[in-house]
Length: 227
Length: 336
Image (cartoon, rainbow over all chains, first blue to last red; front, side, top):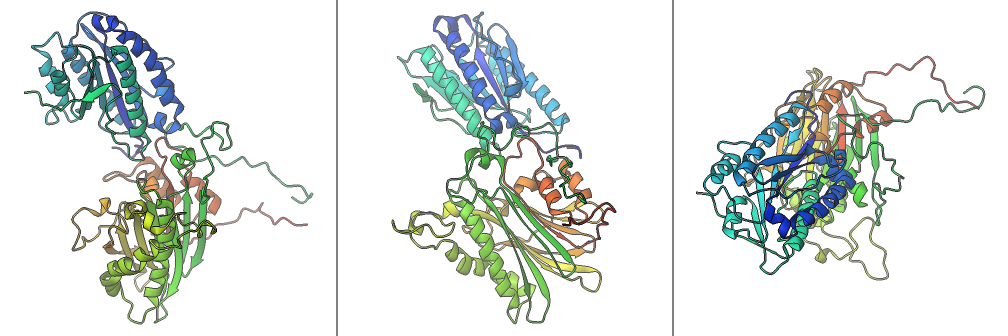
């Protein structure tokens, strides 16, 4: 860090949403599009949190797309909506995450900020359609021996999500909606939990990721490493 | 003014701006947003300041309530104490103590206030003892903290329904409060008020926890002293807190003419220097804190606006350079 560095702390959060076609059928896209503006407004209205955290939004289906680049919440005019598209390509999401995290941390450090390890909230409703190849992109993202900026990942699964797959993706926690729970309702609770995590993690003078308890209607899964 | 009016033409004081303005910068404390609340039990301590000269030294302490506590309506959890004392042999010292309550400790504001005062008063007593030396202090400090300060910290009159709370103490019986709710960092400095033969004085420093002390040299460098490890240290002192830990890490440093000793809580210290580099605020303070400042300017310095700097902020500055400030020729006394 140069002498011009301020020492200002930044805690980056990336929300990664499944935009596959199946999400529309379960009311998932509607639930997410209703919850994201609430998350945005809550964080932007909290001066302590707004100053310290940065929010980015990535949607993925056949390909992954950066819907909101990492930004201060109050600088985001409005949260864009998610849109149901194609299949469920996890590898694309993880590859894009690796790229944007590197880019964003480089940019923040060049401005003199002290950047804490990013947190990723990965939300999906089903199994990956690139089941033979996604794990390589995932490993490249989370392996701290090869990626110094590997994020902490909290994974959430609803509807057809496989608990075993969710357990592989989460690096600090994984949750799946309980059977019989309406997926749209589960997603709304997940977004609330996400908001609380961001607020709680950013409110401390020394920012640190506060792992949430299971959202209402979800249960925690025991994490498993990708082999 | 000579015509009987008051000149109020000077601009309001704005804080130092470090980087982009924070959310708080343009928010008046009285704004309906309620980002600056009173505390129910008092002791908010938005601004505490104490200053004076002694011997060859000029001393000033400033403590400000941080944004996070203003938003929450909670008190300042930092505190400091300054005392003067004289040894049996007539050598004069100033005692500086700084405490920062842990945010996880529910009564740390009280603990910080009480610990700072108790430790400062304890050191006054130790210094006047006939056999006082730094060696003796190093050998006995931990025991004194454990046997004298800790019990006093955890003792106060148990309130009854008819009583009002004892001054600033928790409104519950001591039995109802666990030690974890009274944890504070503790930084101590004992400074001779006059230099020795070679234009320098030997300062005793002791610390429990992560409130950093610095020497600001006359060359504008921030130096963090290295401390000894105590025999019983398992964790680093950075994770320790009083009264759970009573064995302080200590050291002695030379304070040369022109140097400034600076005790800080991490709400300031973390923005002066990280482990390697001097940060932007530290570079500024390195220039302007070479000599004493008038108190309103010093409070403004510590009120710096910097995003994410929302913790309580406390500094104690001990200057050896008391260069006189030349008065402007336009200064004049207000007369009838």
